[in-house]
Image (cartoon, rainbow, N blue to C red; front, top):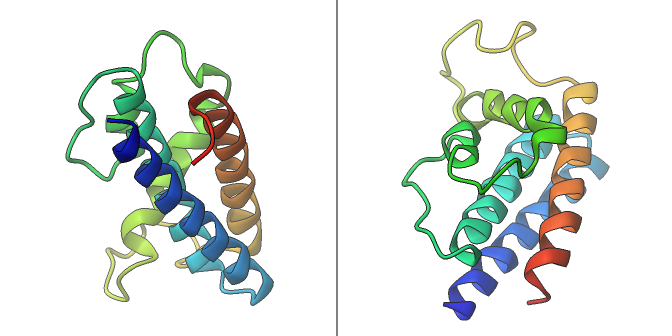
Length: 130
């Protein structure tokens, strides 16, 4: 089980690294996408860490429902906002209107990356090092 949890953390770490690289290159849709992916993978690893099975869903909202107690209640809104970016940042034909301005803005990217870093630091500390 520990190996599987470590793989989720490792993959999340790589997504966080990609988000940072995209931020440096001002590719804001990819910052948002990789930030969402980082958080999704961390939360799935955390669910395994608590002894449960994670859902076969990419939606952070679905995953949050399985977290014990009030985990992340202090940043619930920020986490839910990441779901806006899963489809819109991956496909050029994403449904129009999913984001008010079309593509994620610099501010969207900044907030997404900040959320991913906070979740990464919190969960990696709780679950341990890879």
